[in-house]
Image (cartoon, rainbow, N blue to C red; front, side):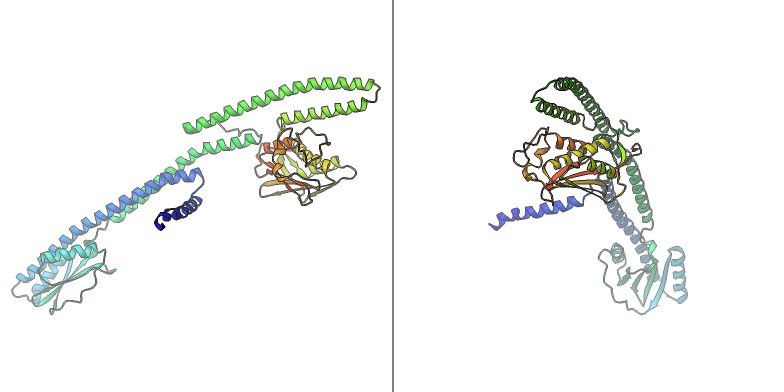
Length: 467
């Protein structure tokens, strides 16, 4: 049973590991593409360099060890072949070894070798040189290849003396390996620079497409230098975006023209109604006038919802002045409207009339059902936040999203005797989303409803005019 449950217990651990690795992985396409291109190159070069250097080091060290061992064996044989072994003969042999073999040779009296040291674990030189000396010289020997000295010391026990040989370490170890390392690092650096420059040019059209799509979503014109360019897939995406933008603009334009015509015809009929009502004398006239006014207001709401924020340019406006205008416009007897804007002036790039209508819809909606309304505005961390709170009955949490649907009305939370077209919140959210933000509803500290508008305010392009 424990063995069957082990994979189940291991699965959450692996999922957590993958989750941590995923959080540490780069998120940008540019960085990921660089890793995809550079990582295989670096790994392949590292493997090739390791294999080549290891093989090169072993082969060259073995061959140099063979040559040095042959020289030492020749010196030992020459010493054994000498009959007198006078000091002059030994000096002559040492001089020949120094001049012709680049070896420093001395013949020490006595017959004792130093204590053997521990061998290095990865000592190719010690292993190869010891093997060659053992194979070519059938005598006791002592070798020292450990340390940072520039010389390798070899001592051979001969008849009546110990031959001490000092060879330069460069004679036994490859000395041109650093050229390969420099070449490898240089080539890798050049490839890295080329990859960075190439990928930067490939990512730039994608960033331009994202910026154009973001500006279109905010209702701003596309950058003047935006065009279809880049790889084939990026070109297809850019062209599809341009076609989609044109279709959306044509659709909005056709819808606006159609509704403008319908509005014109309905306004003409409503005007005739007003003239006829003005000439009539009857108790029902006031009720009919109210119905006509309600129809006129509903028609204006429909047109505002259909048009959205189209046609109005984004300008740098003072949000504080807009909110002060709203406060003065909606004040009624028995209603308390408090305004809290600590930044003065509060300049943000907006469509002034559309933004004013969005906030007005929220404030007007609050004045229908509450006696105290509080409006707060603040710009922080690249976002403009406008909060409208009231002390009314509020909206249940499960219905705070459906109230944004066009023509939707609540049965319990709001009084149905209040006349409304059901488009106020829908129009407000549509306007705010056209600025790249959103509206959320929550419970207010005053006991009623809290509406929060958040609009990005950090990106203000040069083509935005001042109000």
